[in-house]
Length: 268
Image: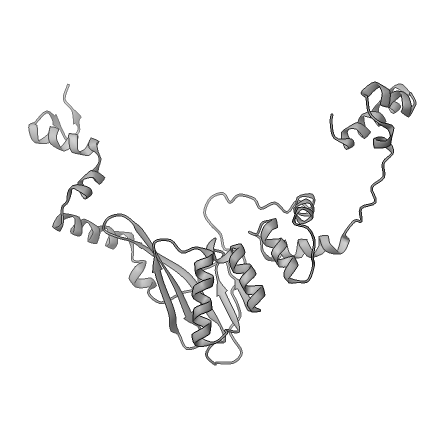
């Protein structure tokens, strides 16, 4: 019972139960009467709370830090701690997803003018090398001309890297009317949100990824990738790849060759 709210509740409980004065109840719990009689002068912030709820409903996977950036973009300048307090009091905490991922949001409408640079789509595709290391490709596609404006491959692409690539692309091609992407972590980072506000570009998030070029090539079925990877391993054996099999499989293979055990298990 260290918070002022808990002390006020205790004093009210003692007054109602034992029919004692406020002075006596404060003396029993060692509380100052100024704490019990304090009345907050803080405003209710009705308009700010409504704005925060609307933004949280539009961006369901955004925390208070990202919502704070959106509030500043709309001209509302407040302390980040106040945003966090209102966010917690309104019960807007992002819940952890359970089970499979479900689409959140809606698809962006088609552009009115069939001209280049009306709407760009961004998405990540990934695949795995023969060594087992994954790599990612950031694809930027013009939805009207169906032209792949950029394909950035790397083993790790952060939000700041996305901003740099888009800045260079805009310097060459011009500013788009809208950018569409899913709710990926790199595409909803603080760096991307601050860049959109500074560049004055509308960024629309959808729950489902937009089809991009190179998807059929880089995201083939698992069976095809596994068969191709196994073929590469058989044609190019090396000690580094053999270590991936694990010591247990190597010992079991040696036991099978020596006739110590059969395929069903160890002989007794």
